Length: 271
Ligand SMILES: Nc1ncnc2c1ncn2[C@@H]1O[C@H](COP(=O)(O)OP(=O)(O)OP(=O)(O)O)[C@@H](O)[C@H]1O
Image (cartoon, rainbow, N blue to C red; front, top):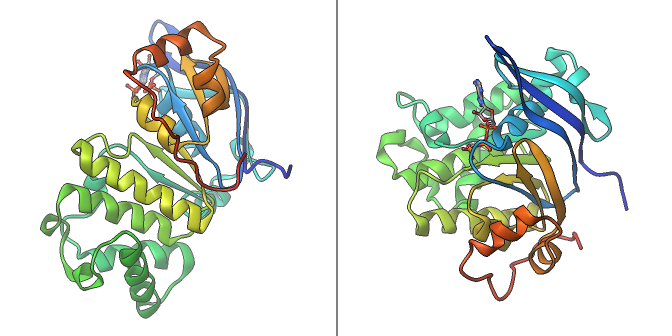
């Protein structure tokens, strides 16, 4: 098997508080393969977002990456100079965080926001950005004619799609989606995520998907990691983990789901 796209090795992340350091992520290791949808599950506060921020080196004080390695195609992101990281963020690793739809600039037409990102990261001309934006809008199911609208003219679900489209426009190898749709109603949420899965199977990027919703995760992901109090207690194929969870906590998590989906939707080449 080829080298994983992302390797997280023995990651420790602390929050440096007045009364001492609190270790929020402890000795966490997992891989994400090319073209794989990898889910991180676990109760609120177990450290999922802390990991997402550490991967993109966007952790802000008091967070402190105390140890470990994060290798993207073998290069340790934790040792990369900030200038090189600029190229990694967005171009190689795209991010869609909770309430990402609010990250659109309300005063700029959507087309200009595509251009802003594409020009900054790839030097695209206005015409090139327009062409790419039209292509991306088609992919996420919004008529290209709406590129000239402002964010407030779109629904919440459409705004979230736009953020995903902008993220995909840079053709990242990995997209980190941290509770990307929790602000939306369940139907829209599912629609958007199914669209991401379709796009993923066509375009082959990898996804790190973070959510509380284990049921949804089981339907979308190839492999999942289960976190408990800052530690990764189990990693494996979603079917294997659902059939024979090794850890008590995973068993409890599955137990909390009324029923597992009869067929787990599987995409991509990872077996
Ligand atoms: N800025 C901060 N300062 C201090 N502690 C923090 C800070 N941010 C997070 N923590 C703590 O770190 C731990 C992990 O938080 P994190 O946000 O990574 O959890 P999570 O699994 O993503 O939770 P959720 O699913 O609710 O988003 C929690 O105990 C949290 O209280």
